[in-house]
Length: 232
Image (cartoon, rainbow, N blue to C red; front, side, top):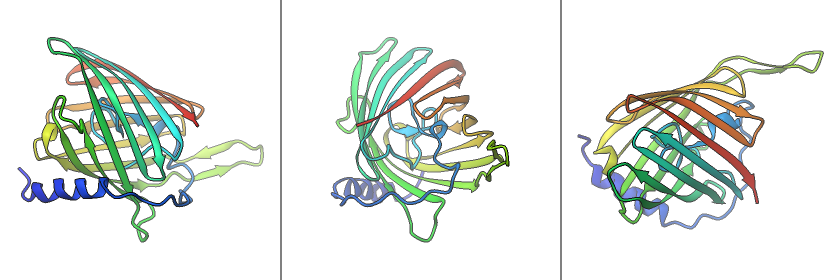
């Protein structure tokens, strides 16, 4: 159990209640914001498989996702309301339980002195339809892909590595969740996570910048999920 979880929850509520003025998006290092790293998680928030990351939908971008697993399927949507703030929800279909609608929100904080490190403060299931969860998560690019263009105009990228760690109440039971993503190209990566109950892993593929698929194991069973991105 993590001490001081009440203060974490209070910080999450405070951060989500602040109305931030729109600001210009920072100039990310090339290769760190590809579509393959911007998928909806199981219950909707931008994340890996079941855990959220610090990242959020871009301003005026909609992300629509679907998740098909053993005993659970979801349809989710996120929208970049203002820079660094995403709001959304998910329809959850569970075997042996009533179908539910959950509402989500996340604020992304970007420390000025850490270009490749971000913090996400959010809530999953804001109205407690299943298990209201406040969380804080940090995401960092430990290895930033090196992007070069050859004389023939072909793009070359070295391998990149992202790591994520956070904690929350509710479905995370005041325990640590962790994850990582190994990026081979801008279109292909492998993700793995510990969601406080199970180790999950998947292979991801992104078609250009508007459609992504991932296939792997969730709670010891196969799953398939997809996310598409639209600009409004």
